[in-house]
Length: 359
Image (cartoon, rainbow, N blue to C red):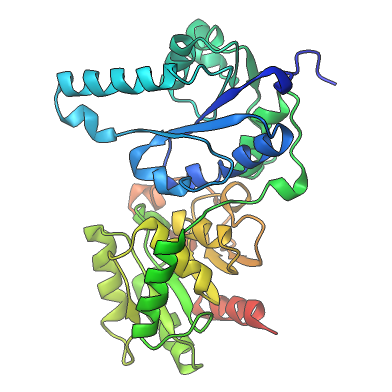
């Protein structure tokens, strides 16, 4: 047993801070479930960026969800200071006993000091110096050498304070909600598509170097259609992503249902839950599909599948044999195009689809 384990039985409220992108926030969801399972009396709050709130809203283990709007800093110094002050005051009214900081963001260190929690845990980061070291009571190490999945890395914060998550409490939790579910049921019905009667493809990413070439995606969709599968395509409302989808769909002889740029994150989750299979890149929609327990075919290039692969869901992860991957680079030579992704063939993806769809 840890000598400095924290006895949660005497605590009332915990704040978990995860200031990152959508997929990162979703992969922190098991932290809330594990905390609540270990200490049901706790009120567990979350602090995330405003645009990622839908990743955690309706999570049954979260009491209150606080948000930071990244646009505050674009609206003038006075507006930003006022918004920051209001947030700090709201957090202070919660009187947190424990703060769990899951990223390297300095804001977490400042908030831990300002909120005065008795206990706090963060990553061990010697390069941050004295300020970081004196801001927290407990530190968990960042894994070196053999990579571990990001979910497990997040849960290390709990292990460090003596909370050991049960295996059945490590799953991703994402709740679309009744409204989003009904909306997607109606939209699919209007398109003449039944639940579990289609393959969901999300071909783009905010990071274009993570994307499979448009021509290969077109060829894949064409072959899937020839085998009788209905296809539903989604993308974020981003100009580059929408252009990529147009380039993919334009050469097709047979149409698809295209929801690109039209769905909220909750609607995207509801759609994924109704799909028979998801095909996509290393991106938030891939993690959303995994959270909805939809089988996933994921194509990985520069990013590492051990850290970021689909979590606890039937899957096929496709990578090339390039010895230089995963490199984490913005395309080969910084050129936005990843040759390791181009090397994944249409036939490889089709085989993975066939394997996952076998009765």
